[in-house]
Image 1 (tube, rainbow, N blue to C red):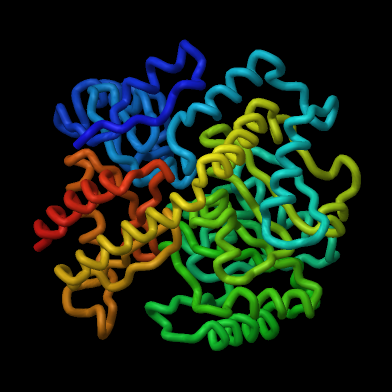
Image 2: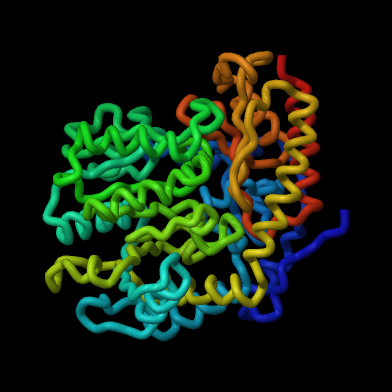
Length: 462
């Protein structure tokens, strides 16, 4: 394979050598994990909480494009992208340049004391690119869970109502409120209660398992909201347009617009949690666009700043302005360096047509996975959009009948691939979903290489 590298011409001199030194190909030179990673892991277990676990205990020294390099010199194809953070690739040249330039000028002032242009520019770009042609405003925060918390409190302030609704199989974070909003208790909430109240879990759309049309699934969801919650008490409905941790669930056509229509008619704020699916991940700026959904509020994080901590709540100006002055904000929210990185990410998406790259990855990856499904009957479903694709695995022979979840197969595939230098992630309510979440720098050649490793891994299943 010919090595390909991310252009580094515009990188500062001190960064150019590092970025250029990462060929875009897989290479395994030690056991996984290698001796240096094992040594670091021993140090880690002495000082880092066991509650902070890792999928693969290899310690990363460098990263560029679609490749991670560990301290032992192994190069991994990264199909996790920091769970959707490095959508624009690892150490993209223009982002690194923006970060270093901003760091020389201003590291921190706190926007709510003495503001700066970078925060304003990010808000302008979000107003331009989030769904909907109406006046929008933004508040910047630090993390996805913080964006969810702020979206909920803004909706409560705007409506004067208390209740929050989410969908089955959802994941929204690890804070007190977001733990209550998650579908799975383990490992996110077990033993951490009491959790926030007034959170309701409505039935979702799961085409592979429920067989319902979008209209039928929406009718079921709305029936629950009306009977169990009561529309007059419901402040907001928070929905991932493609569920992340839930297994990259793609709802039946018409499901999301029908829910939005009901929310609008009943004065309920409908919030799109685009924390994993937004920022060009699915071949559109926001996944809601695939489904004809124009939400009231949009939550952005992960890919917005290529690894710098930044998140946002963006939405209808009249909703966003419901808060009293001083009611929103935080010490580090909208840090100028993180904002500079976000502006550079938006520029990269436009200048390098990364939306088209997302569509390319979807076409290449799904075609390859379809070929694998013809060989292995444990692949029950292939779903997703753009660079957000998943396969749901079932017990052999059950794809057309019980669709019995097969988490053991997913664990075996992830472990086998890791030993060959490919990083995959699991997902799904039953742990039986293998998700592909590469950066938009992942080439067709690298995808073919990873699918070859996956083919070999399937062949080893009992």
